[in-house]
Amino acid sequence: MPRKKAPAKKQPKKVLAKKAPAKKKAVKKVVPKNVAPKKEKKKTKGPNYATLRGMKDILPKEGVSWQHMYHTAEDIANAYGFSYIETPILEQAMLFTRSIGKGTDVVDKEMYVFEDKDGSRVCLRPEVTASVARSYINHGMQTFPQPVKVWYWGQMFRHDRPQAGRYRQFHQFGCETLGVQSPVVDAELIAVAYNTLRDLGIETTVRINSIGTVEDRENYIVELVGYLRSKRSYLSDESKKRINKNPLRVLDSKHEQDQAVMEEAPQILDWLSDKSRGFFMNVLEYLDEAGIPYVLTPTLVRGLDYYTDTVFELYAEDDEGSQSALGGGGRYNGLIEQLGGEETPAAGFSLGIERIAMVLKKQREELEKQENYKPEKPGGIFFAQLGEQACKRSLYLIEELRRKDLRVYHNLAKSSLKAQLETANKLGVSHTLILGQKEVQDETILVRNMESGIQEVVDQKKIANTVQKLLSK
Ligand code: HAM
Image (cartoon, rainbow, N blue to C red; front, top):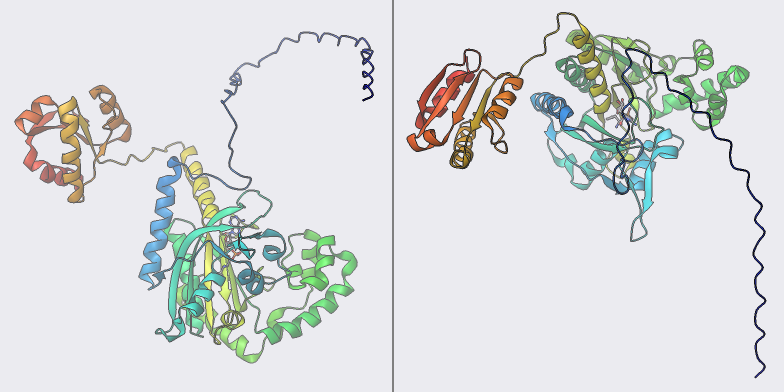
């Protein structure tokens, strides 16, 4: 066998001597007076698992506010006779492309669509209305007493460009009334949305319009497209593209140049059939009667295709000219039929919880800025314990109180009484129950008045009575 030739020795590459970079002149940092020096960020070990763009944690400090929003929504929905419904977060993608419609931003750009393991196209729900309509059909709800009134609360997903009040995962509270065609239904839904925000301390303006039936809209679109073509050169590039794709969306364009053109545009209200016009007038009459202020907004068309007749949006009143609605909704008489069900009139609304949280936060910050602002202390009673025996007994006594619907703050993980009393002071409680070794043996407990420091010995059997009296003061 011929011997393999030994490979030629690699010649070392010539390395050009690099010029050493000129030493940077040491610049003395001048820290202006009254400015705290920047803290160096601590390096964390391992990879940084940040939340995905447009998604956020709801932190414990926001918990009270979120629970308050939830319970306010729950109370009002129950009071108006809506029953709770929960539909899956993952649905067939077709459910939304069919109902919300191609050509809308939600379907064209924002849906989280992917192929499931069996090859089917699924998506994270961008909203719940289509899911409720699907559920109504799937479970034969047309045979239930009509209307079927449902409410929901949950996460939605839209791959939108994140900005203030716009997330990729967000929450909605919503109500849907299915099976009845009556203007009082539309007015009731608007009242529920408006009063939920009012109960939360947010005054809103309701913007309202009617986009009529599908036929009304088709006739109107012919007129609108003619007008838009005649003004094409004045429109923004985005609106130019929309003339053929989705001309109604030009009406509520956010571009100033488009808004000027829209002032002269034909109004959809002039194209409504007598039936739709009459229905809309009745909705407005009910709102007048209920004392709900509204602004007729002929350019309001909404961004989802399933609407017919009434459409509305709610905006925070002190957020004049805002482009971020706190909520919106309308009638969707054709949706259930479109998804394969019987012809069923329906209407509903959804409120955006993150946007509401933003308004509430802003309100709190303004309040805190006021000179005579005093933070509200929650009051209540603290339960402190000292020593191992006492700590063991505490769990039993706290549970006894809870069963009687009496809640006490506590921190069983802390063993120092001083630290526990400090927490009690921070919470602003009026009294602290103190259980030490001696009290465990005597089957008593100390009740300390946090303001005067006076302590009273109480029989453990009477704790519930004592706590009840102190809480009701
Ligand atoms: P929507 O107008 O698309 O309607 O959404 C309702 C509300 O959800 C908005 O007014 C806004 O407050 C909030 N929202 C929407 N997108 C985002 C986002 N990316 N980030 C944060 N909040 C957002 C619907 O979803 C319809 N399903 C309403 C409805 C119910 N119509 C009839 N029934």
